[in-house]
Amino acid sequence: MLLKLRYYGDPFLRKHCREIHEVNDEIRQLAKDMIETMHSVNGVGLAAPQVGVDLRMFVSALSEDGHLTAPEVFINPKIIEVSEEGWVETEGCISIPGVYEEFERPTWVTMEAMNLEGKTFQRTGKSWRGRNLLHENDHLNGVLTIDRVGKLRRRQLEPVLKRIKKKYIVK
Ligand code: ZN
Image (tube, rainbow, N blue to C red):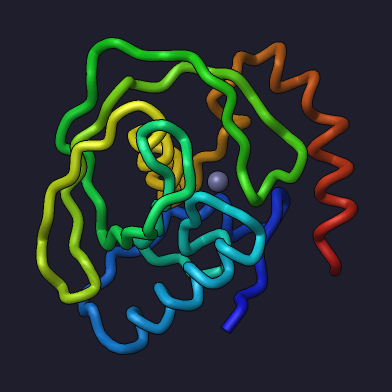
């Protein structure tokens, strides 16, 4: 089932999401629907708040070299370690259409999370894969790409963000 995507201006995108206490059929269905929704907009990752669910879960489907890959579900992810060195690249977000911003992130990250069977696993993501994991993890804390750019750039983006709010948020 396709889920309704939330866009910049929607309060769900600013929520600090809640831990998932039990990985049950409802959660597995949500994951399935999130993957379907992500594919429907050619996304390479999607976090639960982007479909109006304030739970700590995301899907990542970006390979290290920046291509669409098999989706992997992360439940209650925690950052175990990030690289000291960073890299600057341009990043977009399904929830902020047309906005692509350049900023620094660590070159790799190791995360621990649960899968859809409720089993704990660790994953190290490098390059674009790591960038995607960090991007989706940000969503669970209400953090967006536009929060990671400089103050001046953020001010420049205001009119664009206002337009997005107007276009996508139907009262
Ligand atoms: Zn995003």
